[in-house]
Amino acid sequence: MTNVFDDPRITAVGLLYEVHAGLSARFAAQLEEHGLSSVEFEVITRLARSPGNQLRMTDLAAQTSLSTSGVTRVVDRMERDGLLTRRACPNDRRSSYAVVTAAGMQRLDETLPGHLRIIEQWFTGQLDPTALAALLDGLRRVRDAVHPGATAGSTDQETADADDCDPA
Image 1 (tube, rainbow, N blue to C red):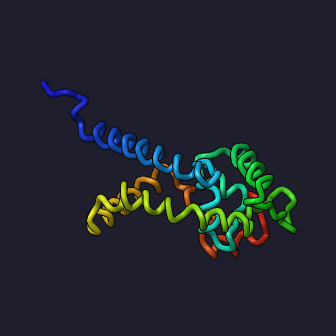
Image 2 (image 1 turned 90 degrees about the horizontal axis):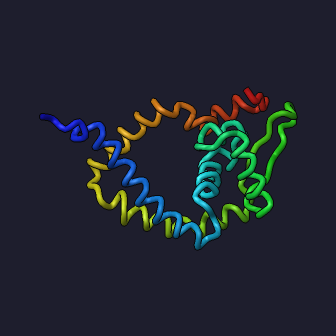
């Protein structure tokens, strides 16, 4: 009799959960040393990787696992800490941008070397270049299927198209 739990689909998701949990624990400890939570690191990294180090708040919500109100709370907290600021849209009062400050970029610069060491030691360093390329391709395909808004506002053209600050 076949055990349903031997199904490779269950194994794949189980391994994904285990890897995520193990990496998340290592990241959280390292980020705490720099006064950042995992969510704050995700927000500041996504902003720093975006054109002009900024995203519309709605795009930031679409790129993260946070709701729009969750993004607002995180940005509020990070703004109080001087890591981010908001920039109002001159053409649409309903829309605003979250922007990384110089202090936020400095905190990110201080945090990244240790973060990259953890990634290399416990993730990418475990794979040869061919395996890593295949994993990245597979992860992007799955990400795009389950989270189609994951790259919202992250290209220069999208930013240029959003210059009118339409919140839709």
